[in-house]
Image (cartoon, rainbow, N blue to C red; front, side, top):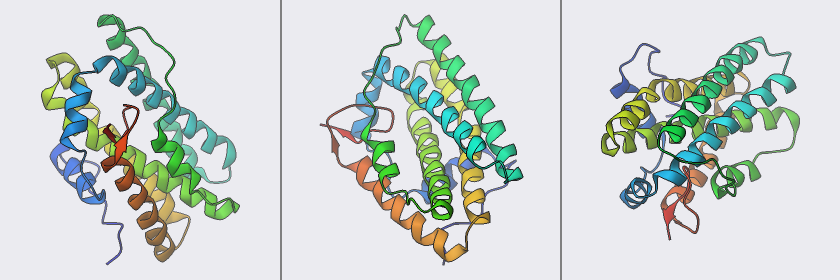
Length: 215
């Protein structure tokens, strides 16, 4: 059976989207990460804002590079618009909570995933799309793990992000499937999912939105 499961309908319930994402990923977020995150909302929100900005930047990079793919252009244009809105919304929460934006070192998560992206142009596109799918799926899974434990306004906001993050994961995965054969997509997806699993469950020296277990 191919790794890439049938994508849940765009009108699926939030529970169905979260269930799909959890089945897609190989490991859930450890409870130790959730506990640490709840005790350091300042770093969590600052890095969350960084992640939203970087997600928009990734979408813009794909738009610039792959102008000959009209469906990619449309999906990434919507993604960029939504990610920048989320960036703005997180900044509002930070302001209300008295959290100042500060520089944070990049997490090992996205960097390690991208180190495995192939350099051949056709292969590179598929790998970038698969990495995008995994990052968005992991973001969705983490929002789902966090929101029930957060103060009401922030928890409600994180719950509201589940549908868009789930759709971003679906869009990236669909684009990868459209630009390569199923066997190749499944093989590369397995490769990247294994990396994600290792990064999420292993000790991590820095706490970030996508970090592993705080050491």
